[in-house]
Image (cartoon, rainbow, N blue to C red; front, side):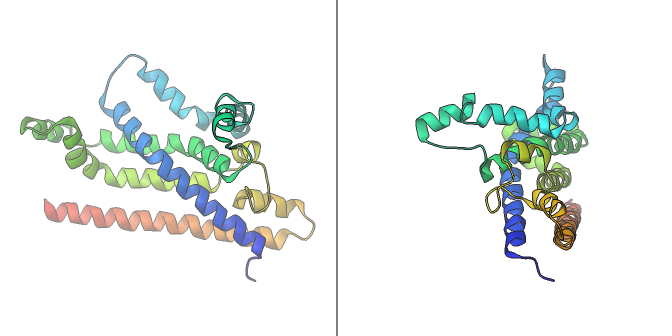
Length: 231
């Protein structure tokens, strides 16, 4: 049985939210991963703990804190509404923000581990030949860490796709506006006779997540083969 229009809306919205969240978190995630992997500085442990805090906090706590921040009465949401007439809370943008916050630690952790695995002597050799820090990162560190970065992207995408607690707090469960796949599954389960719809959405979520993992693995192998051939 094909998904209904409401189910398709939830599927497309989930993909949109997850893709936007990954695109938003990717640059700062790579930067933070490199910073934690290659630099020692006062407060490093505090920064590391702050980045990973969403992993140990209940998602509803994260969602409530986001609501206090980006709601119309929040410090950021109030400022945006006052100066630009922009509402973030209870829109799909709020769902994307929640997914970004919840997926960010997974991306940073994967990038950090990938960069730690890169031999620092290769970076030192490139620097000795006259390459600046940015060029060393772009031409040596990042290419060697790409498989780990891809793994982080997939983890963050999957986490964004499955985000529920923070999303329902800051974005609500508005049909066609903020109702993602997890929220749609929750709604179907609470609706008499909605088990079939919930199962369809569950299967679709499994297929999308599996496809993302498979694509990441195939791309990582292709990059590894090219790197080996270039070497």
